[in-house]
Image 1 (spheres, rainbow, N blue to C red):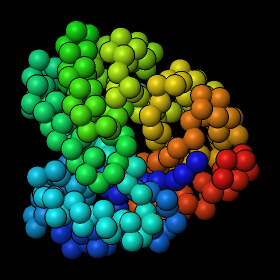
Image 2: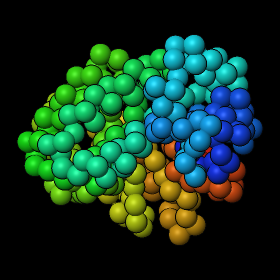
Image 3: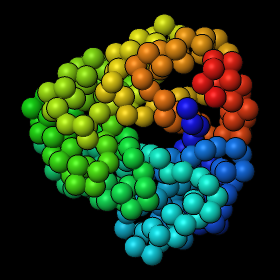
Image 4: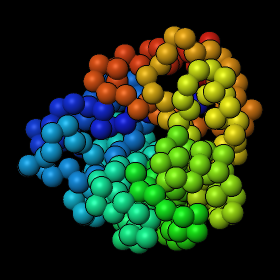
Amino acid sequence: MKFSVRESGLREPVADHPLVDWSLPRIKGFGYDGVELCMTPTRVGRPRAGRRGAWYAEFDAAGRAALVRKARDLSLEIPTLSSDWAWDYADFNPTLDMWDRGVEILGEDAKFAHDVGARSILIHFGTATGTWDQAKRLLTRAAELASKQNVIFGVEGSIWFRTGLGGQDTLCKMVDDIGSPHMQIYVHPHGDTDQQVKDIREAGKRTCALHSSALNDSLDYGKIFAALKEIGYDWYWCMEVGGDLIQESVARWRHLARASGVA
């Protein structure tokens, strides 16, 4: 199993500390195998406070090639993206009948993923709500766009409930109903050990990627790693943390992985 972190967790402003020349070397220096890029307008030169990431319109073909070269030179993978613009989009488009343009933007994220070598993209509808049929139509179309780029969209299981359509169990049904290998679940287990094991087992073979919040000494990571092994997941574990926790998490996770026999 490999270990990655969200680039957006870095606190320095992107205008002064750019993605390619600053944050990628920094993340590699911390000891990570990969980096997750958050797709959101960075407003280079006039960034919003605390916002880091990448945006498809800000990286032309040459810019994407430079990003790939830098990552390759560092031996740092870009395995996943996260379509974080969806939160802002939902603020202005609060119901799913307004999300056709949102799916078009997901298509742009899929093209970006293809160009930089990412395999999976975390997606969600933010706080937007709608009907089952609306969500299924949008996600089916998104899966078609992902298939053209040979990437996978993974709906974040932990926030699916915000659609008003139920918890991760109903997302499992949605993914099964769509029936596309390009529409799966990006699992982010929450709660105590038993709940996290349940979340992992419930998503099962539908799991395309894995997030974790800050490492918690009260959890039995041996059982969590065992659940991941049980469902056949042996890819990236991505830390969704910020600030000092980015560096602090590396040694702790490596120790937990070795102790559980997965590193």
